[in-house]
Image 1 (cartoon, helix red, strand yellow):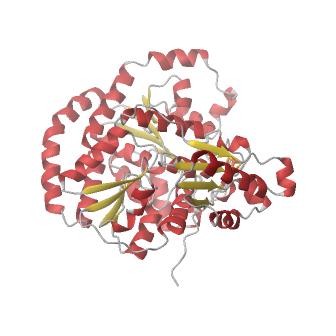
Image 2: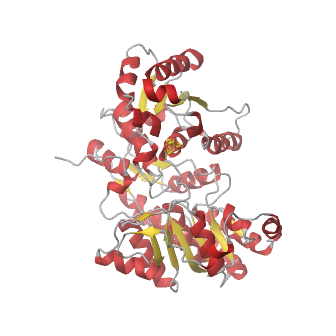
Image 3: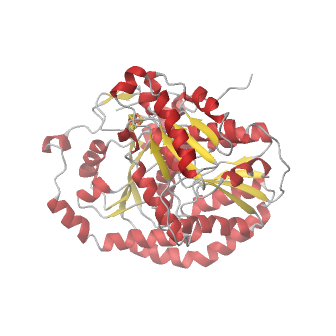
Length: 485
Ligand code: SF4
């Protein structure tokens, strides 16, 4: 019997999400099978999978998003709301909307008596107020702990819902320490409640391009431009898409994703159920990765020769521009922190500019990461690897010791230490493809040459750690896992 994927990313054999060591040691330990699951005896907050489920779907048209949770759980959605609003502005929308978010407000009473009534009322209010085509119901730790059967409640409400499809999503925060599990939970629900294994007529040149919420409109256009050069029509989903575009998924000739940990499991499911082949390579950031990503989907579509010709022309166009940036960045030491796809892609990108990798922080390590680490170990001297979902206390400790010239990634903490920073999860500006590479490179160089803001910030902001923490071993709270140091 085929294995059914649980949606919990830790359940995959060999995947590790707590590790501290070096690139060389990580590579060697993983190869020998010694990189074991570990834990932290102290942790400083994790990103929860519920926000990833919600953010992945929040820009869908004609939809309502119901968090079956206490109010606090939707605090993080402000980030996705901001991205949605800016994304609309970039797409030329004149009257910018907020997404329709409802929280059922589970409280102490609900924990004792159950939250069913609150969920039923919320779904009914969503229909009454917005008459949507889609209603997503997101589970939370609280609804999971009290055992509210959101599947049964939604199925019952569906009987009376004339227009809306009601989709329960199992993204209870406690289920996974890897926030990308939230993406998987959303796709599992889309397959079960919207696509429902129905076969549709195929379209020869249509490709599903799965994109997470963190992709700017400039990046969307660059990816569509590149696929267009191969004569491919793009079904860009689920970001800024609709029920109709979701229903088009099974008609595609192939699938690919912009991010390594977004829709990767779903693309496997699409291959099994709908015979849709897919390309799962890297995030198209930097020359090497953009080439690899482009060749990957071209191969699946039988257009490798055309891809090689396009790559040659694109390289001719941008190589002089890359050289100019290299002259500004050569030899600078970099610490990188981001999601699994972004950090490895950014690490490859810095090679385009002749920079040196000294530290890498990313949430998970698995056989995909091993391929990237092998590549990075081949071009950089030994660098520190911190496998962590957030954990800024480790990051600032490492930065203080390693003293990089520049930080690329989620910048808040490094900026407060006065380091020049560039956000690699930029949802508003170009990062990807050949044009994104030039924009990002210039942004890194501009930051390095203009560090004044972060320097002033560091003079006025005090991080919440004792001085003694900076001389401790950054990984002292990692317990278990034979290869951990
Ligand atoms: S679902 Fe759980 S982990 Fe996520 S925000 Fe709510 S309480 Fe926190």
